[in-house]
Length: 262
Ligand code: FPP
Image (cartoon, rainbow, N blue to C red):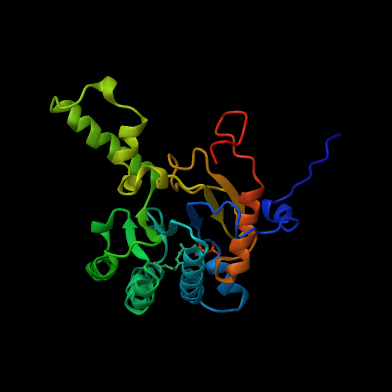
């Protein structure tokens, strides 16, 4: 007879303490899930959850920057999210406009640079314009990079990278045996970042779901995963500290035997 004990990483982390002088993950990626359920619990329309989720983005962005995180990647809209009702999709497309137009002055003050990755040319013009304005206004900032994944899907990203590389081979500019991990990584959307910042060290998903949902499939090969039952609008500074405390407790071996790579 088997007995199965299920223990989520957050439950283990409650016994851990966050050490602000300890290892802070350079790149943190977050799957911000549970906005709809947060709203439903309050008998509010789903979009009210997204609006509150946007406020959480502001809180977590500021705190991540204060902690010294170098890249914060937030999964805001997937290539699969177009399947949602039109009203919800329209609301989600307007959120970046509201977010950037109101929050850019604070981002500038905090020296935070905005980057956005995804199939941006498929977004409405007003969304693309708001993104372009935020990128332009923050382009000289040298602190944390706030990286939104918008209309992003990891399998599509890998297919696009392979197509670009195949085109180089077709043109005779590249031999197939010259294709290696570094080259593929350069062609992914995270190729924008310097090498040591491309892959998240910590991947967080809120709302109790424990799956990856087509997010950064290549880049998370060695990421530490942290799942929490908290819904995204409820996630706060202490929640991020708990996630990092859990990260600090892990023994990262990268396939080897010791922790020296950390
Ligand atoms: C998942 O919750 C959340 C999303 C698909 C949207 C995420 C967007 C934000 C947090 C708003 C911030 C965005 C910007 C660009 C500032 P869900 O709707 O799947 O929740 P559910 O699983 O409870 O239904």
